[in-house]
Structures are given as structure tokens and as C-alpha cells.
Length: 193
Image (tube, rainbow, N blue to C red; front, side, top):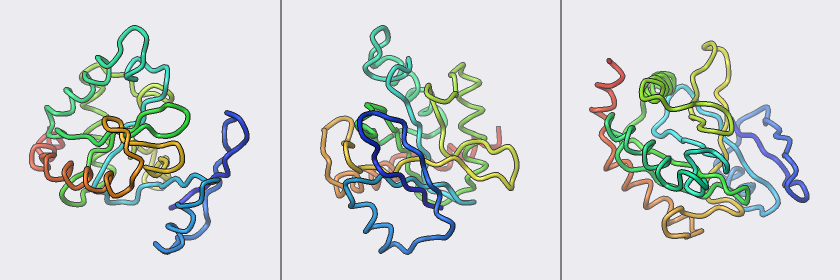
């Protein structure tokens, strides 16, 4: 499910609009390349990635005045214990937020992935909360509820965290490398825990 928003003037909070129907890949691409819109995506029943959304001001954000990169490193270190070894970090937009994408080598249940990662982070005493540390796919309140969306990577104002590249092909190469480095078997073992 795709949602879109026109970029509001200044730093006003945008109002997202969910499209009532699926878009073809071609139509998504045509909207993706528009500089005056952001696209967001909601997860389906299966996924081959997850996203951690860290807003500016969060203690997990690399620019936090007290913790610096330590908070971000602690999140990454905790997730490596369940096989999520290699994130693709992205400055998410002009808002200075950070998205960490963890890609997987095959599709798994979005609900199982959300529950596994959420429980693991809670167990390790991380705060999953809006504007602090958000997980996508999120744990849903019921099977009928929609997953919360996340902004598609590498849109206006977005770049790779480590190298600053704004090129989509660099992000996709990193995504392939991430999928190869993340240990799906170890993640599935953690899901059984």
C-alpha cells in the first residue's frame, strides 16, 4: 500500500494520503522521481527487510548532544546478536532523521519479524516509541490493522549515512550486501525464542 504527501512549505508536518488502490511499479517510479512529493510504503504479510526510524533528538540519533553515535551503535550491536549484522543507514530527509534498513535474503512473515525484533529490543531495554525509535514493520494491534508506513529511501533530501551518496543504485548495492550479511537462520532461531 502506497501513501504520498506533497512537501509542505517550511518544516510543517505533512499530511499523508493513502492511495485506495495498488500502483504499478511504473507509476510508483513516476511519483518517486518527483521532487515535490514523498512516497511511503506499508508492509504486506511478507517482507524481506525491516526499518528502524530514529528521529533527530532521540538518544539513539548519531547527532545526540550527550550520546553521539553511542546510542546508534548500541542498537546495531543488540540487533547483531539476533543475526541482523549489516544495516544500510540513510539520512531519511531534510528532517535529519535516520533510517536503518536491514535486508534479508528471503521473505518472512512481517508479523513474526516485527514481534521478534520488538521483543528483542524491549528485552535489551531499548525504548520503542514514536519519535524515539520506531520499528517497521510494527507490531499490529490485530491482523486486520494496517502496518504503519515508512518513507521510501533516497528521495528528496535523503542520502546514505556513511558516504553521503544520493544515488539510488548505491543504496541498492548496499541493500544486496546487507541481505547477504544478515543471518536469516539466526534471526529465525531468535523468533523461536
